[in-house]
Image 1 (spheres, rainbow, N blue to C red):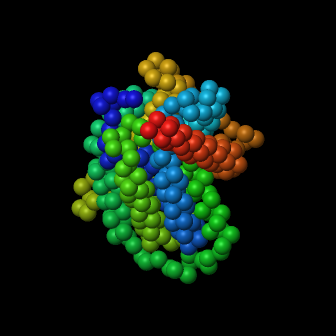
Image 2: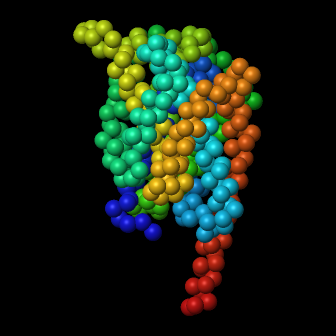
Image 3: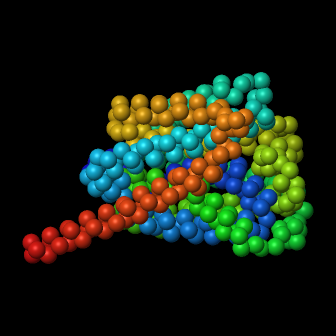
Length: 361
């Protein structure tokens, strides 16, 4: 289906996946996990197990999403495209809203958020790469540096570690654990778009063990960040901070004090990780819309929708206020339904081919 020069390795796909999710997990999920105490920590573990099982199920449906018109028909293809693109637009809008708010507060307070959002999207659009190989090489190059710098941040932050008060983590409550697990699983529905890339991976049948290692690496990084935040600020301190990881960055520097604004380096690395996330969304949207000019126009329109949505408000509340409710009530059942449909269609297609081979033999 694809030429060999339009394929990437499983390791490159894993590194793209890790870099795509790394920034949002560190900026948002680590703080939420630390503030949620023991219930949130256990929810994170259980949610990751569910997502890993879901990715395992989806890896067998790569052929369906590579050619949805062939397996699902034209109506099914358009439904899938509409759901996926609207999900990317909504998620990108919320992510851009949060990023521009953080940058305006900690770095460039004089610039209005629409201008910051346009600049950030422009950078993500230019660096998104219309070739999957280009993004694979970029991920291969940046992966050790980005991950290493974040690990260095956590090590330096751990120097201020005052210990974790286990009593402050609170008692375990089944309803809160279940709710947190569902929340993480719902927010992880972006993994449903992963099968689109699997058909362009060399040795795609053996890709799941590599992706599983990537998922559990993301879990370890998130748990490590949450543990450092708890040890430095305590659970109550984390609850009072809007962006706990950014506070950790502003209070962390290399020994010797050779630079007075070392936190700018941390912020720059975090922003680069977020750029990779937005670039992945735009690239994925382009592939959904088609190849060449259609994909380019699709990415451009998706970026415009993200920019408009980033300062959209409803009754005085930003879009992020309703994000989880929209994902849980609309996109979670839709993606689950489409995923299970793809599994059924793939299995039926396999059975038909097997019967044909038996009849031919």
